[in-house]
Length: 245
Length: 245
Image (tube, rainbow over all chains, first blue to last red; front, side, top):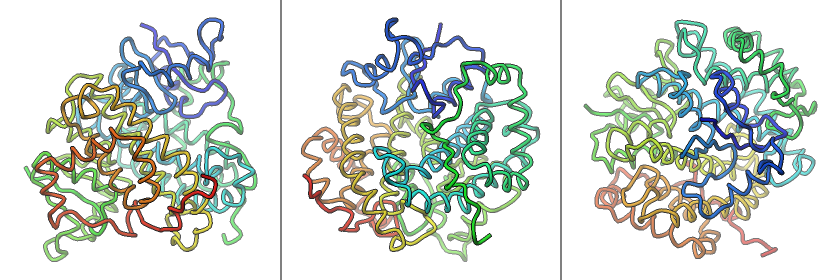
């Protein structure tokens, strides 16, 4: 069976967390919106599926994944499904739940990273909420980002291996890699400062990046570059060093 | 076994989604932070558990639930666990995943409702982000809230019963009830207008409120009143009718 991933074709966005899991699992998939309209693909196919009235279990927004008869939405939910199917999550109940818990915490972090450039409305341009973005980004850099980083550093300190759940990789590790990569792109000055105090998170990032399938994926054309349409955007004014530091 | 719920004692907040599930399941639980410091409870006990370095699987924030040896954080994750244990979610994989998907969509909606009054930082007072709150609330009232309501109305139209998954109640129904109740409190004028177009969501709210255990809970002292420290806050200026409507 070949999975069908539905997500915006020109950004990493939330779809990237799913792409990383599919790549690490070496699972056959088609990134539907990146295929041609002529072949029944493209954004058109994605939006059609999102808006169709005869879909029994509709999704609120991309990404969503078709897996045979199942149509599964919400990033963390897709990963819960893929994790169980492809050995990217532990089998015992407590560890499986903790993997999901870590993923949901990463989802919160990602949403806050997004809101640094869109604190008022996703329906408005960045330029129309620039002043508010400056204020929100300051709070993100000084309070929220260090708090999230500290949490994951602590989780890694408590673990018994290089990964969040111990010696075996889970989809939460792939996602933490992605969040760190995104934050480095969006807030390079801030992250240079913060990473010094979070060596285990950095080591995890490097371990994930070095996994053969992930390394091959990152070097391929399938990996879309970070850009200013995605979740992690580099606007230098949002990465300003604090005057109070 | 008696569950231990850890959440802020003076607000409904995200803990309320867990309380509703525990109440509907008639599961024995203690709301730890609402018990006395002298008995080892209170906020002190909650914060101690959150900050302790010897907790193998720490939570990022309340709520979290102790269930025997398990300590489970993140609202949707706690509900995933309780749903499976107490018959508040279907057993088949597709339906179980869809329940989780709906819950995660509700969580997104709740986060956006929160950000109407705190668009810049949770660490600042409302009064320090009032102008930004007005702008964000407008976008919430006009775009986001109608979009979420429409999504759940559609999900109910597709179902084969009064509940989101069909004839049987799930924890996602309890949560949708709670979100509607909260929005009515925070945005009464907006909701009077929007509810007319979403009769199935309103009917679901009423069906949940009429369930004997939920009705008894809502009438009890265990149900904390909505207030301006919680997620759903009534600031009349954020509920202003649009000048453009």
